[in-house]
Image (cartoon, rainbow, N blue to C red; front, side, top):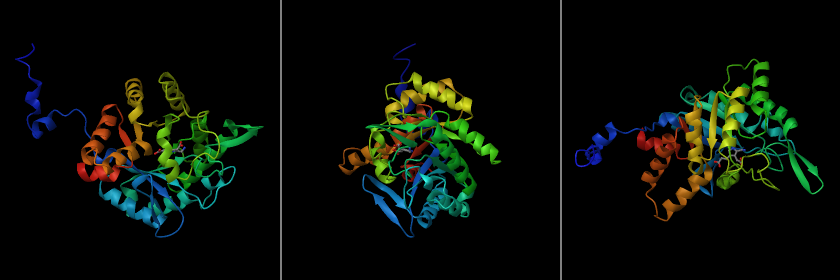
Length: 329
Ligand code: PBG
């Protein structure tokens, strides 16, 4: 049967009808809100390339978390701006590191009962060179040395979990980090802590504003020798497969919008819980258009999030989490 018996417009005539047949839902509980913790007290410093995103001291982060919990947001993803940086990123696993302090304060707050506290595990915010692992120089060129970096990442994951992280999320893209982190957590009797692996992470221009927010831009070179080439879908599937074999409990796909086909392919192929990260550049790009009046903020934001869910993500890491939760909660 076709037209005129079939008229798809019949089910689009009112919002209740549209709601009844809507295929994709978006709940505040599906959203994860990234926070950037910085030293000090009462600090709330806006990131210039990310309107509405702030570097927050721990006390301010607790306030932000309470608001997020009230809005029904699913969890927080924590990043840190340490007091000082060095070659090996010691601040990442320092017991009194910035995220460790934040985790202890958040755990003690009422928000912790309603939010999953996810700690990003990486060295780039803590190394003086801004790379995600240990750097070795070879004359004029350099290499991010995979295997020695694993031990530092594992140490970081244990330290963050001991401080109160419910989930650890390695974003460094070293080979073998999931296995190294799993082994270290188990050895520390933290076998119940899940790993959310950024399994499919592309070397992307869309991380630009984040590097301002987290002060983590590489001082030389780029990340293309460890993050994936944006042209590769099959390789993304291999990354996921290996991370699952190493013991990842959930995976994160990143960025979201330019890679929705990768999200869909992963969803069709694997059964594990999966999130997608609507990264800083996706957020800033939309905001730039909002500021010029070129896009309707509410509609464009919700459409971008619904698209990521429709592609197959169970949850979305997004800087829009609070704004979206206010609209859909
Ligand atoms: C750390 C990390 C990055 C992001 C998340 N974790 C930056 C990078 O890899 O350069 C990017 C997030 C965003 O752009 O919002 N490795």
